[in-house]
Image (cartoon, rainbow, N blue to C red; front, side, top):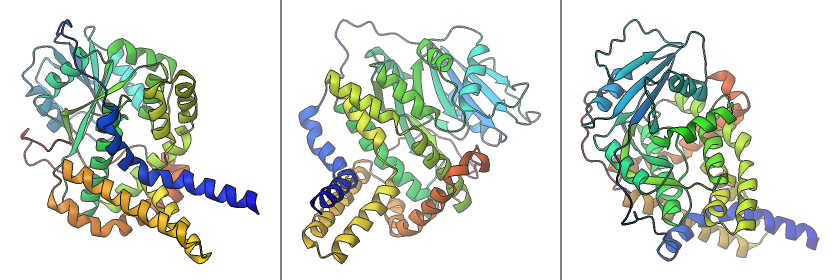
Length: 400
């Protein structure tokens, strides 16, 4: 009986630490703050950039993203559009900085599209930055990335701010992104670890990304999960730059949400185990970057540990263990506090706060996604975008 009780307590700790980790990270950041400043003797360089914009089947938003990039006042960049399995007859980019590529055969893979673009570079670029076809790039994006690369980093994750928050689902999707960017991006980086990659709005030294593509053939979704693990395991840190902003379209329809989240959940189950190797390597080498990042990779998706926490609380109430039930309540309140801290720091729109009332419905959609996760990549390998840009001004956006 004592053995079973010990196992039960251990399981609760494994689940419950996810609730309190964000607030602990927030409180410890001032004590663990790492020096990420540029050395005085470093030469400041203006790098040559290659924007890789990937589209699969749909080209509706390509004009907007390319227009936003071309408005950047910077001399050294090219835009490579990989229109995989797309009808490009209606696309006409009359600018010598834009290269439109249509693979001769369907690639249906982010990494294969990236490799195809790199194989068709018109010159050797210093930096590769990955942009989704639904993104809008901020005017200062390149200059901000230059600051991070001149600080000595080989990989940078920018801030993906919400392009649309109309509707409950889009607002809650934006709230989720704010939470992850604050804790898994800004605070992790400030503590001397690495920011997690978000799939777009990220940039790498070209040779490093080329080496990754040569070593890995990642099929389906989740290339960013493999990439970030590879970078950190090799001892590199992924910088976070909250001023290198791309506007990202948030999911707005239930079926869109279910398909997208099914793919994401599938990738977590597929690649979360990479965290064990990184954590072990970090412990043996006393490497702060790898220890923190390994812990983050092992954490389940937000809705899974919230549901598991609620289950543990109810089970303790049913069995009469009110002390543990009280601990779960306190842990839950601390998590809620940490979530609101992220929203407040980001100066979130009031629509997002009102949308929080619909979290139970949002989580229900994600439970459906969990059920469909096993066959996620067979259901869909891309997200259809519905939001239409009425204007693409690069106005000021909230920083974390």
